[in-house]
Image (cartoon, rainbow over all chains, first blue to last red):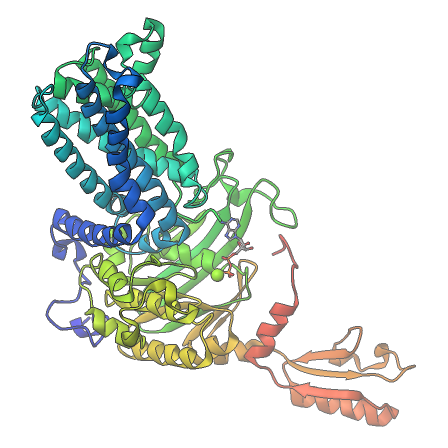
Length: 283
Length: 335
Ligand SMILES: Nc1ncnc2c1ncn2[C@@H]1O[C@H](COP(=O)(O)OP(=O)(O)O)[C@@H](O)[C@H]1O
Ligand SMILES: [Mg+2]
């Protein structure tokens, strides 16, 4: 069979041989293709984020507002009651706040919106893999959150009663695991969210649990032991334990334990995504 | 030898009730659905079988139409061919590969337009195309794709400002971005105004002439009749007629209808005519219109019977389709 009969369409520029025959051989390196597709998807997603005022507010301003709130009320909340200074608690909590707001709470409506507008369904008919499609949506929020974390650490390190991160490696591991966990949790939560608007409500359970149990408002060592033990195994606490261990070399508990717990929760979230995520609209 | 770009054998697809379909429910027991019987109405906890044993193939370079009323199972069928869902039973091959397991190799060579796909409403047409183009191995220039569907003047319009028909054309343009060898179009002209519809038909013909194989679904008879090299009429999950439009037409009986005056029982008609009595008419279906009509008229003259509202129609695709559309839920579980 001649090559011309396989030419898919005569108006195709004749620069490459037809793809028939050995498609595997002519495919480019998969990682480069993946990067290209991720780039295209995240660029579109960034445009959407910038055009959506409430999403942008949640991703950029809210974390800052929350930090300001902690700063002004820090003493009355009793933030410095444990073995950490107020500044130490606020600095690390601010990172937690960025993870919860700029990543988790921002991404739920993004996934729901794409799903309900049948964008996910449409994208799935193309060459991008499922993982690329889901990652593409997350990239802008994750990048914005990383920038905010970097700024927070930079500003915090300059603060008189704080230092530069003591164990940067642990801090990076904590932030990266936290990002991954929040993205996966956002994907799972989106599966239980019907509309973009109701994402504000479905985000609450994990958000509140994380705030209350992870030592962001109350230091765990000021709590009764039994309570602190339960709090330490909640999903977001190991992430914050790693962040505190990385920045302050403190936070109590065992770093290995926190690392294993954070990985376990992340893996569980990954499993939940496989189990419950849906591409088709719910309405 | 004819090369087939799509081959389908014994394809079945069941929603819910276990089996391997992508939408399989958790409560499914894991028992394969194929052997289970089914009650009327479809959904009795064992799920609903939307596709009930299809066999067909699409040749390279042809337009193949799957024609059927709403709910016939067209979308359920093409979703399997597109690699979006697993068959409950049977096999499909696209370009010689399994569209589901060989997805990475198949997708760069096919183009898909869903019956209901979507693009982010806050992106412009160009931004949408740029996003899509970035996901295509060897994309057509965006400008060219938009020109093909006559959308170049809408390039900077937000998707949410587009009319339903324009969205449909944008969707088609995205399906064309990768120079597909095989194009899947699920109801491509539904919602288009007559002019846009003509333009889409012209585009489909041009694509076919340049070598693209096209599988389209439609519930418009004229669309299938005008565009398709071959077609299959689908009804309740099965193919009831298949072939070229001429072949399908030839399989259809011609029809003679009339009313008998009061007092003349249909039983008096010549038995060779095999007449059927309906509430409002007598109907004779025949493969031999001229002879049967002559016989009927002779009988009427000899017996002095006036045939009221006498009508003789030669077979047409429209007759075949309307006939199927008319007979709503029937022969459940038969065959
Ligand atoms: N996700 C689903 N779950 C259950 N039944 C479905 C689902 N999708 C379609 N069906 C049913 O399957 C049948 C065929 O649907 P579909 O393939 O969409 O038909 P068509 O595309 O020909 O209009 C219909 O009776 C429809 O109600
Ligand atoms: Mg359909």
